[in-house]
Amino acid sequence: MAVAVRRLLPLPALAVASVTMATEAAVGVSGILATALLVYEVAVTRPARVAAYAGAVAGAAQLALIIPLQGITGHSWGWPGMIQVLIVEAAAWAIGWSTRQSRAYTRGLVEQAEERAQLLLAEERIRIARELHDVVAHSLSIVAVQAGVGHHVIGSRPDEAAKSLSAIETTSRAALGELRSLLGVLRDHDDAEWLPGGLDDINTLVEQTRRAGVQVELMISGHPHALPRGLDRAAYRIVQEALTNVVKHARTSHAQATVTYAPGEVTLTVVDAGAGRTTTPVTQGHGLTGMKERAALYGGEVHAAPLSPHGFRVNARLPHATDERTAQLPVGADLEDA
Image (cartoon, rainbow, N blue to C red; front, side, top):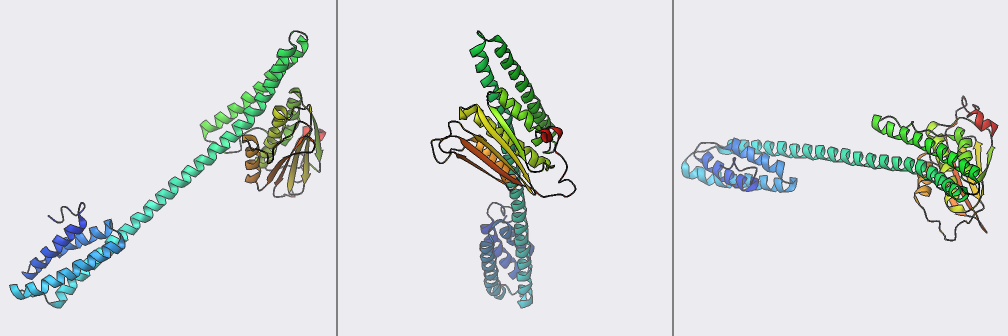
C-alpha cells in the first residue's frame, strides 16, 4: 500500500514502509526492496536536503525498531544484516538524487533553448521591422510630397502634375519590389543577405530625394572600395533614413550627403539647413533608433544633433575589416562617376 501511494505521498509512504519493513525484518521477512523504492521516490521528488533528512530519519527509525523487535520475536539479523539494509537504502537514495539532478539539468537546457529561441525571434522581428520602416517610410514620404505637389499644381501646371505622378509611380514600383524581396525571403527562410540596396545605389536614392523636392548634394571622398554586403546595406539604409527625415521634418529644399571612405571604415554624413530641433536631447523615433541599431551591429556609432542656428546633422561611422585583395575594387560605375 505504501508503494502504491508513493507518488502522491512519498514522505508518509516512506514512514509507513519503514515501520513495516522493521516489523517484517524482526520476524524474518524482509521488505527492504519496497523501502528502497520509496527512498528513491523521496530523493527524486523532494529537494536534496529534505530527502537526506528523510532518508537518515527512516534509517535510524528502522534500526530503532529492528533491534528491540528482534529481541521480542527471537529472530536476529545481526549487525551485518542491518548494515546491508542501510547500504541498499543509501544506494537507492543516491540513484534518486542523481536522477533528480539529471532531470533538473535537462529542464535547464530546455529552458535555455526556449529563452534563446525567444531572443532570436525578438531579434528577427526587430530586424524585419527595421527593414520595413526604412522601405515604407522613405517611399511613402516621397509619394506624399509628390502627391501634394501634384494636387497643388494640377489646375495651373498640368505638366508639373504629370512629373509628380511619374515620380509617384517610379517610387511606388521600387518600394513594391523591395517589399516583394522581403516577403519572398520570409517565406523561403533564406539567409540575411537578401535585401537590395547598397552604396552603389546611392545615386538612385539621391535622385528619388530630389524628386521629392529636396536638392541633395552628394559628395564622395576617399577611395571607394568594396564593403561587406551587410555593412554596405546598413550604410545605404542609414543615408536613406537620414534623407527621409530631411524630406519629412526639415522644411528645406537643400541637403548635403557625404560618404567618406578610409582604411577600415566608412563615414556617412547628412546635413541640412532646415528647421532643426528646438528640444534637447533629440527625441529618438523609430528612424533614429534603427540607424543606431544598424551601426551597432557592425561596431559603429551614429550621432544626430541640431545645428546652430538652424539645421540638423546625422553622422555615422561604420568600421570594417580591411582586405588587401578587395580594398581597391570599385563599388560600381555610378559611385565612381559621383
